[in-house]
Image (cartoon, rainbow, N blue to C red; front, side):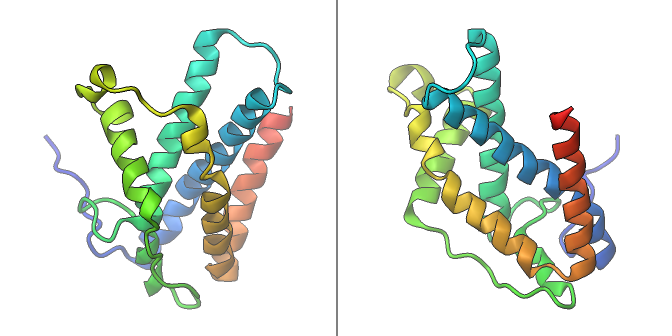
Length: 170
């Protein structure tokens, strides 16, 4: 059985290889946030309850991944964090200070989404507005991160984001 891949000290190559995966998270977070906003505004099409739940679940998973990426100071050994990019020449940002709401949201997501825990049935969970209200803040983090990347990585990220946009426009 293979052990977990090591990423304690990512190389520039590791970071470059991560760009398509970051694009996947960034794009889908914003894509699902838009679909949910359309539904909350009454502009979205009527969809089966199971599909609506799948969209919400996908949004929450991407939110959880991005909160860890932007705000964790030390994850698992193989977790990629925004702060890992500080080794890239030309990367022009520092660590993000975690706002007060992040810990509460991550706790809710961990207890209600990623693990089967008793708060699921013992406590009333927050509604989608509770999570969705943070979309603007996470969107700013995504934009700031993208803008801080050196031009070659920005171009890679933009190309992948454009590919997702084109795929979904078809």
